[in-house]
Length: 622
Ligand SMILES: CCCCCCCC(=O)CC(=O)SCCNC(=O)CCNC(=O)[C@H](O)C(C)(C)COP(=O)(O)OP(=O)(O)OC[C@H]1O[C@@H](n2cnc3c(N)ncnc32)[C@H](O)[C@@H]1OP(=O)(O)O
Ligand SMILES: NC(=O)C1=CN([C@@H]2O[C@H](COP(=O)(O)OP(=O)(O)OC[C@H]3O[C@@H](n4cnc5c(N)ncnc54)[C@H](O)[C@@H]3O)[C@@H](O)[C@H]2O)C=CC1
Image (cartoon, rainbow, N blue to C red; front, side, top):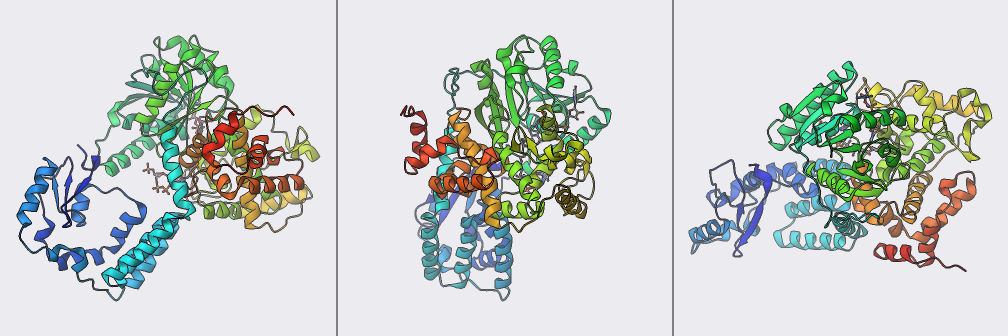
């Protein structure tokens, strides 16, 4: 059993004696009291970087590591209370002052400032705007620099600042939001507490590209037998290699056994005949997906759940290709699929409660947070992503660069700006979607190249794809990479030249665009769509949207999620800025404030907990 299954630290008496109970691989029991305080101090100062990395990152430590770090006294794989009593008895009557942390000498090594500066720099970079991790380092620094009592006072002050911050409110909100999405229900009556999931022991993944590989890994890590199907020989070979690498790294990181032999690879969907559930992850192409669903419906054993990882195609249309449409649901994962914690479970109007419950539970088993969403074009996450991406393209047309836009979004707290994220996902995915929607016109379209159905459109994403630049997978996209599959994004002079040439061709004058405009146009367009989604009943509540954005796209948790963030900025302010941008860009419907946003703003910026109530109130007929 893993060491880090649980670490329970029990305070025994008030004497800093702690016992940790955990299932252990190590049997030796080490008592901190057997070490000299000086040893601890030397260890702690020398190991400052390591200690602070535990504290600011909120990293879980194993019982063994906690013991090694001197956080606890003893680890037992027997009864923790008995061990605690024994430990207490062994020190009873002995002077305990030497054990009190407050009495430890705390020498300040000459290079401690340098160490702290380095740690602070790293923590600031990783924190992406979160103040708690940075404050942790400040507190540790105070503990080293000041006498114990003063250090504690400083820590108290720092804690008080955090406690009353907007970030604390956002994190508390997010904590409960993540729990709220677990109590899901659908309009058809499926519910988390009454709909019974089916057991799934064997699953198939069809299509082993960017997504199928990560999904295969997550299924295998969850203990399922997996049939992984890919028609292209070259892709299959590359997929095998990639999956093996991910599993090896995962096993090493988690100290878990390697599960390579749980996966059987195949070249034909026939291999999926005896599985309990299929996840289709082929190209985003309705005709192709339909033909695969027809085949699966014919060949799979009765009762097999047929799921699609589509980014936004109609689940109902796919269900209609099968003999049992009630067994079809969307299981929408996020790239990289073995890393991102989100699963959108898309219920079509005909998906049975059992099918929804099974997908929701399987997601959980795979270590994901499953969020149930309704069926519409692009569902929740990607529906909000579209106006966000389009604003980013407009900003390029107006004079910004991918690096500038990404920097603003990364400063806000995203792990990747919109262009880096698109390169990771693959630019061809959305290109296929736009082609299917008839949005991609030939280059000869001239003046109309930037207009679709009377609204402003940017063909930049299409033009990039026409150059074979699909992002990381081809080694070129909005950035350049050292090789196909490379991950380090470098600015690409070709792209800058291409943008200049595009501006000249379309008579666009580049202007200086400031940080605020980039942030507001991208985020408020995304948030506006979020309100529309709530109004349409596609997401059950703002919490669902916020969890989707934090876990699916890396929206900074300390900002709560896009809907919470809008409330924190002030709905009236968001409304007013959208009105402003829509006035400047009347040909961009995504900037026209949604009527729900207007209603909420007119209700006086109510707390997010009251939005559902207002959402459900019938609108005035006056
Ligand atoms: C209309 C719109 C249509 C859109 C098209 C379809 C799109 C969709 O349907 C929905 C989507 O998926 S959109 C994409 C959503 N994903 C994101 O936004 C990812 C944002 N980035 C991150 O979270 C972190 O940077 C990330 C997690 C990537 C990396 O974080 P760290 O730097 O902390 O990572 P590490 O600790 O070094 O590594 C963790 C694992 O991630 C792997 N990895 C890192 N960078 C990567 C990259 N650039 N590309 C792929 N994988 C990457 C890394 O290898 C490691 O995995 P293992 O090596 O297996 O352990
Ligand atoms: N790339 C992304 O970030 C995300 C993509 N998706 C969706 O997942 C699906 C797959 O996307 P990607 O993995 O990015 O595409 P990809 O292009 O990287 O991979 C698709 C794979 O499917 C294979 N394939 C095509 N026809 C097949 C068939 N008949 N049988 C078996 N394999 C077949 C292809 O050879 C290719 O290896 C799409 O529906 C996409 O919208 C969903 C979430 C995120």
